[in-house]
Length: 242
Image (cartoon, rainbow, N blue to C red; front, side):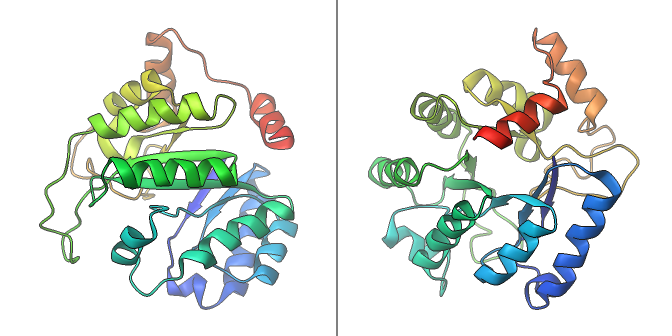
């Protein structure tokens, strides 16, 4: 699946016609399932994106604890994000929700988030450890270890035995991928082809000489773990029946 993650980039967010044209181009060139992550967009735009090839909508709540949400997404509507996912699902999108750990959450807020995702029943569920970014209000936040993420990931697998759960290469690369697969993840995200200028979201390994995030490196490590990648037809079938 092609993952078009652009957050709320105003180039696309303020001119959704550009994004629609972009999705059309990607679909015509590659003819693969497409995941979009543009932030909250109005229903008409989501419908047009779906009509032109977008299959999956990734729109993370970050937390379903409303009090914590106000601190994380300042000035953004909690309900708008929830309702956008609901609408997308109603018109045929597969939907991904995700939460953060390591950014003011505790056991109580985590349970609230797990119950929130359980109620909405998304097709893909994600947990990621917060990584401080230079130049942001939370740049001095001390990052937690990944232990909390792995525990929550394992709980998600028990709660959602038949759903997609990502093992992202963005946080700790291919070694982190192994830990997340062992904890219960079943789909690998943030794969970056070699010799290209594409980037992920966190990119802890941007300055490393060998990033090992290309498809061949991922498949090689999977086979070392005794796993085999699913076929394209297997993945398409999951999308069709999810």
